[in-house]
Image (cartoon, rainbow, N blue to C red):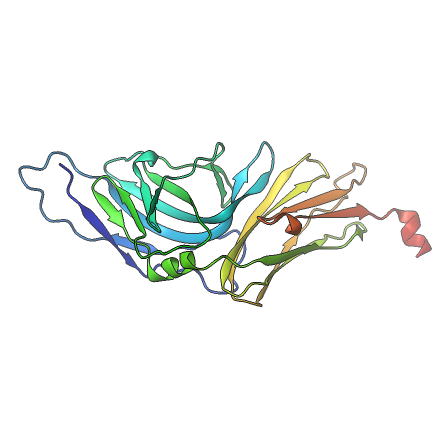
Length: 275
């Protein structure tokens, strides 16, 4: 039979205000040493550690040639796990929350993380995503698998109790540029809600030489009324000796009203001379 292991969480908390960029909150958990295996034990239970836990309004997923945000009507609890020695199937995990039990979500193309296309849970671990109600009591919150369980830290439990806040997102940059200027894009995210929470957005580019390409996944934690400003160097419409072509950026967010498109066009020589 399996020995039961309980993992103790050490210092795991949702990142503070102002975190931005292609990041993942990180924390470490150290498994509590297990007692010696008795002669009646047969086999070893999976050695699982939860190294990261965040509550988000959406997750970034890859499409055919771009990235997008998969929203939820409630909230996603995203856990990053590692599995050692004995593998465990994703379907063996379950999460208890507010009196109900939930199984990990399945995303056909996995998740987009740190530039990696299609991150999936494997025998070595990986992301586990649970689609949960918008609010609920987290007093019974437990992640369980054969031979062990993990209890979310207080910061994550408190986040699960409160509704996620709303965010206003804008995408700005120059509308026209001259050669060899490199345009700068600016994404502004403001927490317009009454509680702290995490935003998640995705940015793609079309042109000048590609039909579509991901720019990046951005996330951060903001208190009510706080604002993050994310800047990225954009692509110039002038590439080598080819004709200059318009570059278009597409921003995607969990809330559709925050989706945005920004176009950067080349300025021809005649227009520059006349001005």
